[in-house]
Length: 169
Image (cartoon, rainbow, N blue to C red; front, side, top):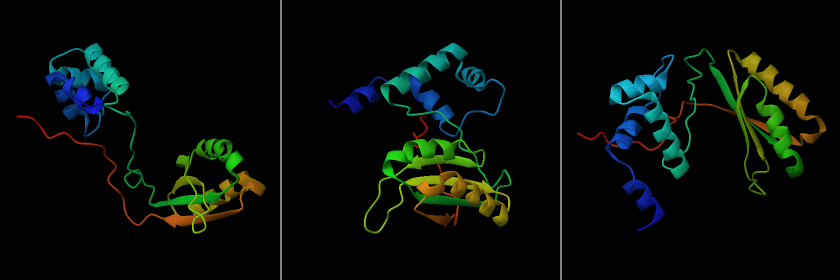
């Protein structure tokens, strides 16, 4: 039996119900884990400990926020890609990612000779001119480390979800 099969076999009925209950997102309440616990007829500590165990086992990779920028009024979204020195990409990426208008920043491998960009950062704004100004801030921050960059406009929202379990009857 593979390790993934062992992990799958270690899930009991309550684990499965917990995954089903949270896979569409946490409830927007002051105490989301308490709300889930009430729905599942258990207590909040049980919900939290089971999620922690499933994260340790790799069944659940992460719990995080996935905002819909369009619904928040940010209609202009673009991925910026930057060519910076490999030895600086981590520190520069952390600086760029700390900007309040960047939702995520990360390193990607180059694919030479066609693609030489290694730093990616998603920028959001309410207008095209606002986004352009924010890109200028990044360019200034990167300074002489910026050898080249491109702006990749979002054409549509991609559905951001993980694995979904089929509801059990």
